[in-house]
Image (cartoon, rainbow, N blue to C red; front, side, top):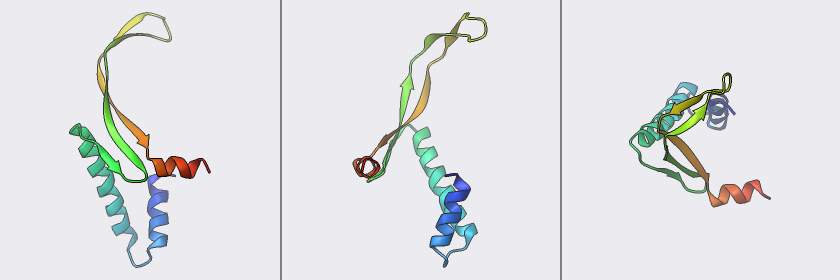
Length: 92
């Protein structure tokens, strides 16, 4: 599901809201999750899962074309861990 499909479904399920308002709500939620992760904090949505940031250390990688060794710098990556309710629902 894409962001626009999510917005369309939410607008259909809530006919009392304008689509532009639903779009603004979804965008605001995603922006807040992004900003929280950028600060290095964790976002937990009960029953769904938790977003966090993990640090991936520097390492020596390989250029796939030439096979030469390449230094890969340390970086932060987003990480998602599913919640118990979501896992149970998927495994029914």
